[in-house]
Image (cartoon, rainbow over all chains, first blue to last red; front, side, top):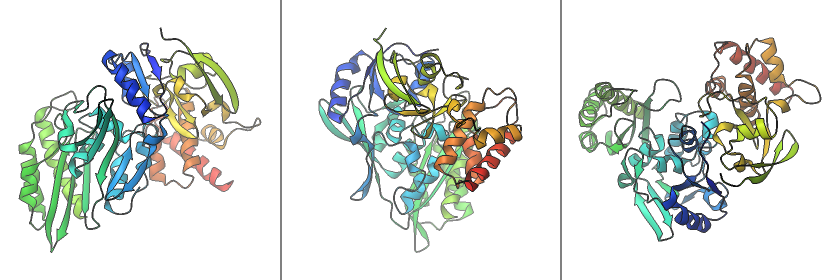
Length: 285
Length: 160
């Protein structure tokens, strides 16, 4: 269908965007960034916002820069920006590897990193990345600015801590140390389809044993999360096939899998076992 | 109905001034308000790629942009591929390698390929195939499309 009618706003500054959003949010107004999730939803008339606040004209939101020990990603930074490593070291390579799994080329030229976080689809690769690496998010409204942590930011399917009048202006990812290894594995039916299950694992090898272990699983539950039991189990251990298979079993047991037309709970649980093991294996390749 | 907004958009080098409702998608504006029907609508929700055009040189699915967002931008559609009556290497290659049958998906493939190859002329075969895999074709089975784009890519590299 054609989208239903809306009033269009095109602010030029963050302050203006926040002010307008504050005025229209209570009347079903929302933010338009990449539009690659919002506009299809409007085409189905599953979403009928009466106002759209287009933030693509806010130059301040284009920033992508290393600030201290963080990579700062503005709200209008497109997925495509990450195709080539944006920072030296493991983080740049990790983002460049993960980004190839997001939708398709022509979607990645418009869709945004922060938009994916705010949309909070369980299959969002960036949401899994944010949670696993411990990202922080900056949200602004007419009431002020607040910093949110990734492990609390995602509440459930398509739901975050953001209030309806809050604009996610920036996300910050920690710069990973040079010794950090990472592995990412996603299962989807066809290339570019939504992830049915995916895992991101990062750790360092110190004296031959795993340290700073982070293992996140996404696509399987309403929101992505780190699996504490698995991380504790792996900490201080020497990597081995047997160890990773055991960790993968634990991840599968820990998950409360979603059921939808893509996969039932049993299949998803099985996929979590596979993707977790493969993510860990890729990290030591 | 929200009041119409006047926008200025350059399409294939020519400036157009049109008045559109905010909800008017870019593909509908190109086809209906500007009158260029070379860009096709397949699914209207961003999965088929038939509506792919170049916006400021970048491949974009025009059903996933509102026309108002294209104000002051430069757009290229399939009508603008041929220059001075000369077919673009991609158009020639699609003909030579049977990269089309009904032709419905073709403008989307042509603009996607043109955009990808202009931005990354030395793109690897694997990445090129990956980029092309995002568009749907019901007729050809894709192999001849890949052959055509590869052949055009070689030609485009050699005439640089």
